[in-house]
Image (tube, rainbow, N blue to C red):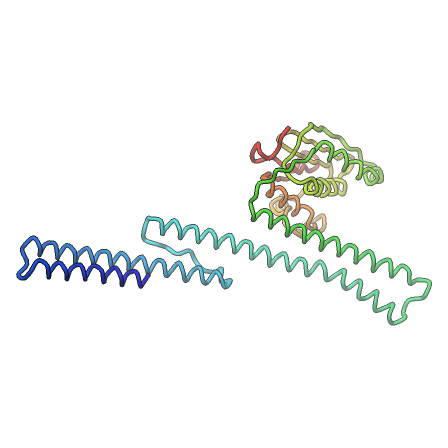
Length: 319
């Protein structure tokens, strides 16, 4: 910008000097007026470029501060109404988005550290007792089983984290998906998979299924159904209901209602509420819904709770 201002100023003065030399001395009245106009134009443009440079420098400093992680910067106030102002608004919006992503990442890391610390402590304590010979030979097997079960749980949690990260990456790419999933067949398949657990808890399941196809990979919609059904089976008293229409998917359970303060953050990772701490299941439901342009919500009914996904556009599903 400084080079551009200097070059523009140089060109104008060269042009002015050439005019004076060509027109001779003394200058005609019209030439004097022309010279004065050129000088005023030069000064006006220089002032405009100077203030433009100041605004761009402010924006550059703002971007540099954000780049190194200083998200406490206040939005820049510009006394202009042009494309530079539009650019400044976009930069401010980008900063807000990056700050939200940074805060979410920090909270996620904190939650992961806390949730992995407990099972690791269990494994280390069991190993320590086995190594020190504090366990009778006849009681060794339960300790091995505990180490295996806790390790398996940790591995599944890490796999969920990796899958959640992959989904967020796909969201950032914003690429269209040509794949579709037969939801009626998939739901019937998942009900069959949950049948032993439903029978164990003596729960009945009611369905209303239309032959529809939802945009997206089958494994992603299987993840959505598994997490919603697992949540429903965990809290249901007697009944789980699944409805799938051309515009929506809903899973209901007649269990206890969710406190109002929890409804706003139920889809956040590792949310802690009165019913205990949730993991990544509902966060994955939210992310997959975002990936395929669905709106996910949770609502307390007269008795029970319903989770619902609704396509934002007709392109999200087909019959």
